[in-house]
Amino acid sequence: MKKDVMIVTGAGQISMAIARRVGFGKKIVLGDRSMKHCEAVAGLMNNAGFDVEPFHMDLSSRDSIRAMIAAAQEHGDIRYMVNGAGVSPSQAPVETILRVDLYGTAVLLEEVGRVIAPGGAGVTISSQSGWRMPQLTPEQDRQLATTPTEELLSLDILQPENIKDTLHAYQLAKRCNEKRVMYECVRWGGRGARLNAIAPGIIVTPLAVDEFNGPRGAFYKDMFARCPAGRPGTADEIANIAELLLSDAGAFITGSTFLADGGATASYHYGPLQPQAKQPAPKQGD
Image (tube, rainbow, N blue to C red):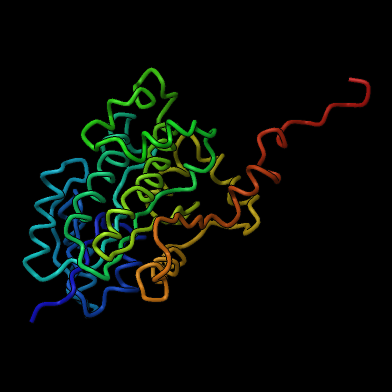
């Protein structure tokens, strides 16, 4: 008996939390670049009553993405997609971040969009980082949204001389993810399916721990300490949003990005996390 199939990329804490929340009764094909880690996560979930098949996949490769989709289709119609794969600014150089987080996500949304079943839904995990970088021009946003995937990395805005560092590359990648969701949701809609993004803030995961111990660790710790929530988030809190977006309760939501950062972005623009707010106030007469 064939089941509805859910593709999940990235065997991390957020992906697993979403899969556990909405994946019961479905065939879950879980892809990750580390097969050892993927098999370990699949084993945990299978021992908890889920039906998970691990699959070695590389988000930066179209052939790898297509192979995972083909493997998933052997089990039935692909009705759900969760993309949690990616690398952080402290984990990889600029080129890898752009190749995986930006190009790879664009390819995944495109390829799954070709086969997603009517009534299906997808969620891709973006980041608050895309909300803090300076605004791009309307033309630059359109380029990130609509440029053919195989031409994306040739855009002027993504050339090494125009990227300051790995954080800037990550911000550009996440901005592209959200613009790409808006573009691809129109194509998904032609198949009667929906596509959205979630932009988490600081979520306690191994990736976040890498950031806490990286060159921007103090910045991130200060961010969650001084945001309105006063703490980092959890993967289960992101799964709460994904559950809405992947269910019939979210039937009128597509092409959107849900910012879930404990108010950090709001504080960055209008509160104590404003860059200028960290500077001492000038003394009278200065």
